[in-house]
Image 1 (cartoon, rainbow, N blue to C red):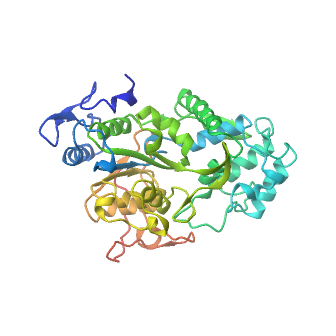
Image 2: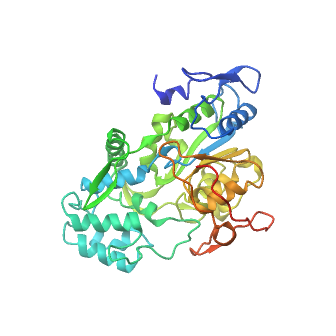
Image 3: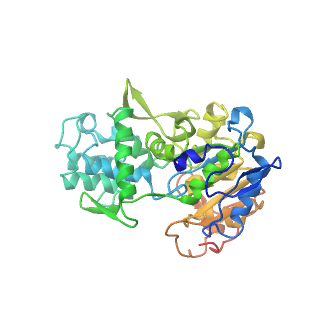
Length: 411
């Protein structure tokens, strides 16, 4: 039986501790592991025992508690959207946009970025045809610069005009550049990139254009165990990610997470072919990033329509458990009513909220593979909140009081 299937096998599973469940019967609990910091494992086990139902299949529609996990650098080490983008560039799978007009690929792409991409890539392929980025270094380098740095190789901003609390255009671009391919095509790309990333040694790099980029991804064993334990105790476990949804579906399947339990960046279709047009949430072009993650969850899981999907729901219609690692996860993790697990990646707003721990429900854990070192103190009182326009402001609690600067204590 695969590790992913173990998560669906009910109570137990080889190598897993059999604890006392909510109804007094033995049921799967998290395996002992020194990578769990402090009492994090015990507190998660207590929550699972208290809220879960041993051996019951979990569905929110039937009253199951909801567990939401981010994917990149939360459930796995490194980023599967990056891995697939790099694979596509190395294998010449990015298509020339119609009329070689790169503004088609994102409504937020700046004129300077569109001009740089047109200059580097415009003459290499007819509109709609794959660009030879596996061999043409300048075109590949421009794509990589816009994607990884959010700027052109000359240093000009690549994206502008977006709500920084609802959107991260570089991540959306990874999905928008899938335009012209079918779902089956993209699944094949993701499967190939996944295998390559799992085969690469930890710490390995690859050449993309003339740049050196991360080449490896690993599932966190502790998060694999967490997913399986939640599933075995009747939680409805779902992924909410800023990577392309068809890519995350490929990776999540190995943890026993069905395709309809994965929420990622979605683009519209023309027939059976993907386009660069983003799907709507809350009545606007959207992606699962920060407040956009809440919107997607509220809409898809709880059936909220229109602008109200961006609003916090009453506690019975919110996740019980949330886990993430970045400022793009702040809103959905804060919505969790029982426990909130933060994988420490030195993200200011998220770490400020976690260390302030105003309601005692936040857990902080170092990264399970290659954890980061101690961060300088987090400037929560002056820069702890990401404004929609990209500026920073003091972070405030629900009562309006300012969160003081926080020391990095778990690393």
